[in-house]
Picture: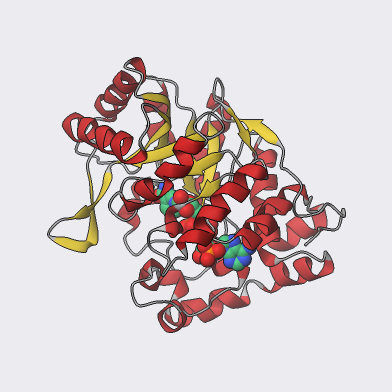
Length: 345
Ligand SMILES: NC(=O)c1ccc[n+]([C@@H]2O[C@H](COP(=O)([O-])OP(=O)(O)OC[C@H]3O[C@@H](n4cnc5c(N)ncnc54)[C@H](OP(=O)(O)O)[C@@H]3O)[C@@H](O)[C@H]2O)c1
């Protein structure tokens, strides 16, 4: 595939500094969660080849978390990480775990003893001595944020972690954390369908020099048109079957919102996925902050398609056509909004 500038999909992507004082990384990262968890069956060989291809194309930020498959995703990544330790920026997360009483539910832990245990588990499974970017995955309001970030800062002092990140925090939480220790990146959902962070989190990150790492920039695949009704089209254990936007009447109404995305893609000889990714990159530029979206894929062809999107520049007219979409989306982005920063604001 080529985009309209004629750049072949195999061309390496550019780089950006991940927040003030942060590492230089490829302008698009790779979300690895689906390689072991949440999105149905995986071809392991193809997923491993996708990791190698990503690096060839200049993708250097690789994203995982201890909760993804209860440590399985970190273990899956370990051989790749060890083979390319100095070429990649390895990001993982703590704080979210599967509830031992009910595996369909998640628990959140921000306390210091839990963190100390979690980091040792991630280091062991990944087979590394240091995690490059360590995120607090979710906020547990029963623990003072200063205490958690203070404990995370100890890990930096001890050399177990290089940079700190936060996921799904409010602007106030980001400011409070930054007062304890420099925060390199905030990871939150940001896409054509999910723009709540633009109100206060994104401006705060821009002001503080913190990079934004948008997760699910393809709306968990929905924005690509790959599926519509999760409960009819996706595997029985696929996480997306629990998400209000992708099920029932919401799914059909939301699929109709993708018409301008499809039209713009067609006119540019691009794909809807590429338009969605180009949009995130350009929204961040409008806010004046560094951004490294981490679309998730387990397939080389899609990875090449996604990285080629970094060379697409949407026009003001195209951006205007995409602008109203988020405001019309039916359904929340999580069944339980307490798992989001918006749910706490
Ligand atoms: N911090 C958090 O709370 C949080 C939450 C969710 C995710 N994340 C991270 O963010 C990463 C990305 O988010 P995500 O995986 O949820 O959603 P996403 O990147 O929006 O979408 C991933 C889905 O889209 C499909 N896909 C990818 N490229 C495609 C293309 N070009 N055409 C058609 N389909 C395509 C993938 O399928 P294939 O794999 O089969 O290609 C997968 O099903 C995750 O891997 C994870 O590391 C973080």
